[in-house]
Image 1 (tube, rainbow, N blue to C red):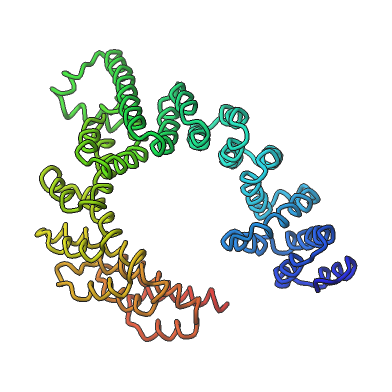
Image 2: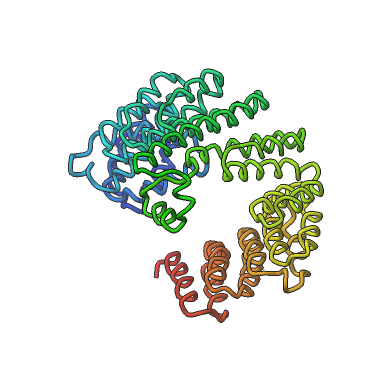
Length: 476
């Protein structure tokens, strides 16, 4: 079929039904004559978009998953021709809108100027501005000034903030100092925080100490600005902090109703990602300095997030020292506990598991083991992890540990994951683990999966939901 003439291709396309579109497209992508290939792919698309647009979307998604860049380029070029030939009514369908969005997403990375034309022509409201975020990101690689024009014109504060964050990261890869000056100049606190966060994520790889100082300083400035505005808000109501402290019930009611602002800046919390990265990198070099830096940051939330990063970096090199610090200073903080064991497990899962099992607090041991098993199975030896879990005492072999193991091994060992999932006592958690394993079994062998399901005693609602997966695959 690769060597057919244009007329012969047209005959094949006219004869094909919806089910035959994919095989025709796959054959057309093998045509060596690029001019003929383009004409044929356009003709296939003309029909495919009319008879089964959802089928085409699935094909496009498959190309993305497979990383078929050359084929995507051919199809994207043809899409631009085919879509412009649709009537106004045809172009207005939800399915065609999804096709247009896929095209714009592709062009945003590969030809942002063209993507902008398509977005302005076909998209509206938030759908348009969501696409513009991706377009601004793509354009920033070529022209930061033009990408900023797109972001500045956005009406949605959320999308504008997302665009600024995307631009900040790309710009920082080119010139982190200029990007940081721009980010600091933004007047909206939330937009400023998101942009600075993105810039510092990149800048921390260039000059860690400078990035750490910049984050600390900007968090302090944002906090001071927020508190000035909050105090002015209180004064306008004839209130002071002392008044609120003396009447905690009224204070709580006012906070819950939104009548007054919280006593801390929510914008500072937007530095969390860069704080974790900086903390981790600092701790890898000097844990003591990293701890001092994290403890000095504004706001409890930012401080805890930075400490997660510190303990992550610390645990890679000296996990016992990290645990000692955690036990002495934050013995009940499960987020920090998970940070230590996730990091340790990436280096030595067996040692991390042994430590988690011996913590002395069954609740903390179970939580730490969940983190270890999650890493152990995805990055290490699934069999060793499974054997370890099977030997745990019942007090530590919790639903969470079983769930972590079952979902992690479900892709490679679905039947074993299925058996583990059956031992989970919580119905909701059990269903999610069973579904993870069963979805793989159904894909591999629907008939065998159905037999396994029918031979397993499960809650009726769980059996019905899983049975629907079989029906969807076999077409019943």
